Length: 311
Ligand code: DP6
Image (cartoon, rainbow, N blue to C red):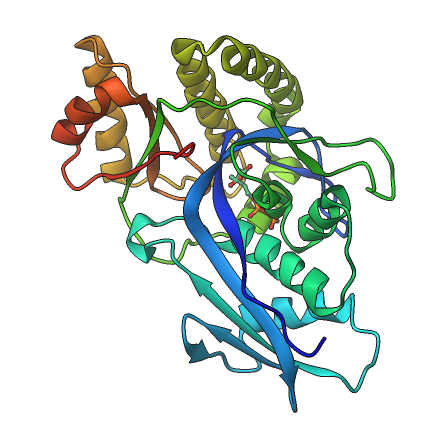
């Protein structure tokens, strides 16, 4: 085919985080992770034949030297059969930039789906996930809706390191996006996790923490135990941030407003409102709550963007 229909992949938020690689080239993680996909928020991508390689992001053509454009073309190169073949890649994020969410997960997942269509590969979902993983680890999880587990795998070639969807729905679950800052982060996840693995002694305890949290999350999801889900997710995120802070030079992604939001959440809990948070390699918070607390959480966080992951 010389063009594809537009494909879509959702963004995702990890409740048990991926932090640290055992193989940087293949993007193989130190630990398994578990996420929830953000339904309609994500990336749309389309590939078509062109006279020269070009990458478009949200309607604007990127310079050839652009970091993101180079990553996209390098990814296409893995699948290109005919070296003379040039492509136009059009990608659009409907993640409000204002929400300060990373787009690399949905970006590489959508790119992999577009490559699969464009080259007529018809790969199995697990293979699509493993390839998306090579673009960005968290992209392995963005191939699916709902709860998703990325199994770390043990093979050296990484072919058992892919994500699978969990067979559970949780209609009452809500995710709130608290925007603290939308600026480009100082240290991207890739360099951040490498620095942590190399310099933080505290990191030694991370794989154990992650394994235990993964178990707790499975149990919480199976029993629809929201308290367990929230507590586990928040502690997992803070444990990851503890390893970041213990790196050298130190990595502190928080800003004063991030801490203010954490304190507002702890205050809300002290007043009986069940709301928890998780955070990635940036200053923004993602809130976890259920439908019955939505009005109260919105009152405490004006302008909060709320997502219902299960529609
Ligand atoms: C903190 O998937 O962006 O968001 O594999 O190097 O591209 P690379 O890293 P990336 O890391 C995500 C880290 C995280 C936690 C998570 O999403 O699991």
